[in-house]
Image (cartoon, rainbow, N blue to C red; front, side):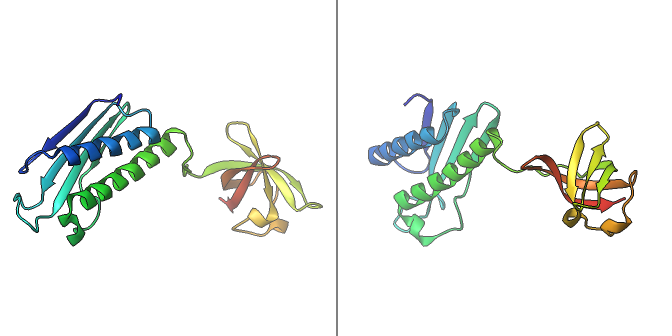
Length: 181
């Protein structure tokens, strides 16, 4: 194991078998993200007792270069969490999901919703029912009449101000929705 791992048992005697399972699950997390710098796992019965029937909770703190993930509760309180291994499984599933989301954002695979862009219609092609929008930063965006949300295509003229949502099309940037301003 490359990363520093700290395991803390609260209100419970340390268990070598549980500790070994935690190490195994942390090693699996390392396969999801190679950016984990530190991991701290806290084992704790919810009611603070070691008696039969105590529900277990696992807190997992993962330190990454530009974020900290803290898993405090893997889901709703469940009687199945009387078994420490079931609670451990659920906590690490939640940690894995959070880590996968972190990696998707890092790779920029998550859609971002930027604010609407503005421009003006600079060209219309009635024969093909399309046109081009010139943005305020000098780019040209293709649009089709089906993208027009407000107004009718036949009433458009060059120079009209529009608000649009940009996306990548087959021939370059295109407007998915166009609203007259």
